[in-house]
Amino acid sequence: MPESLAGIPPMVIGGSIISAVSLIFHIIGFSTTYWYKEQTPVGVEHLGLWKSCGPIDGVERCFNIADQPVHNSHIIATEVLECLALGAFLAAVACAFLKMFILTEQGMLFVLTGLLNLMAGVFALIGVIVFATTSNGFFTIDSSNLHYSFGLCIVGGIGGVFSGMVFLLAWRWVRN
Image 1 (cartoon, rainbow, N blue to C red):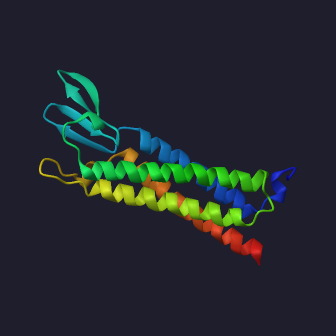
Image 2: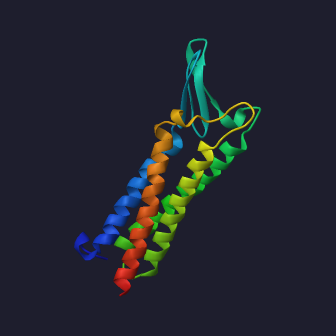
Image 3: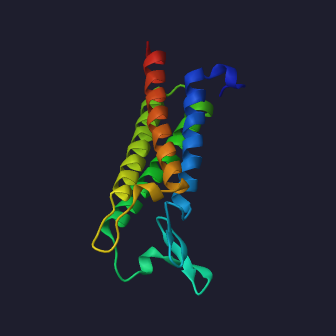
């Protein structure tokens, strides 16, 4: 076990920081209700992956999307993809810190961490694409109304892809 960060390759430290920050962005975007925000005649309504909120009789009320009588397959697909991304991000961060502090001699953890980060980033980005293309007979997403939660998941996904590439490059660099 290294006594300080001096024994850890700089690419591993950088990749781990990017991975952790991407995880934080993804968690915030994943859990908040501002993927989509729209001004309606009765007030501002906003939608997340799990809840839909809007004014009813002058008071903002939120409803679970799963409790709605009609389910949109785009929203369900986005929820699944973002859950897979979250799981992959958590596993990637865990592997990164295992590589840095416990299993320092295990070269294959570079590959595993890189692939988990790439998977997380790709799942997150595909999830936001599916959400942005949501359309059914009653509702179509207007891209000008996408909000900060949506953007944070995009940033987290891009960070995951970038961190995955950093870890794969670190594996290649250390191997040579």
